[in-house]
Image 1 (tube, rainbow, N blue to C red):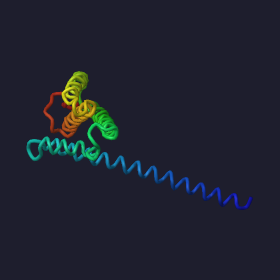
Image 2 (image 1 turned 90 degrees about the vertical axis):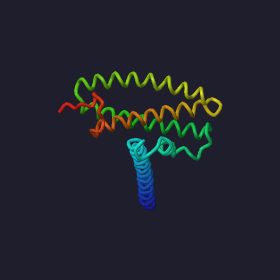
Image 3 (image 1 turned 45 degrees about the horizontal axis):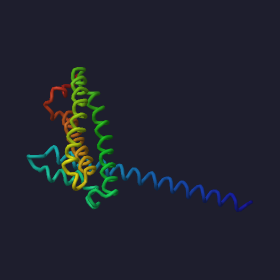
Image 4 (image 1 turned 30 degrees about the vertical axis):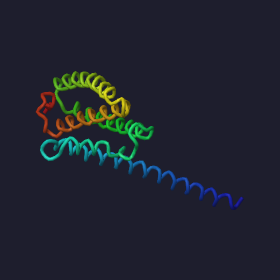
Length: 171
């Protein structure tokens, strides 16, 4: 019975170390994703002045570059990439909505609804055109790059670099 208490303390401390390690690794992964996204957005913001589409596209899909195109690993990577950019788009969109006028909010809502339909159709077409390589990979890549383009525009709106009418702030 005397040994039980030290053993329980040891187990508890090992569990705390394991939990801390997992939490630290998750935070590190989130920081890596954020840093990679920042590099991509910087590239897109400087496109046609200092960077090219090919350079930005390479950065966009860098996390998946070692996977064989169309493999289950590649499709999984592209799906995760699309989801992380989708989350970034949603948070950036909310930030823009918090800053723009009521007219800007209405315009932005309408544009986003149109954008969604456009992306679905465009990326389905891109997927069909690339079906001999991997229709799903092409569709996911298209959806990801279109989402990144939207995030870049929303970031420009937040930073005051956009001349889009919906970027007029309430202040």
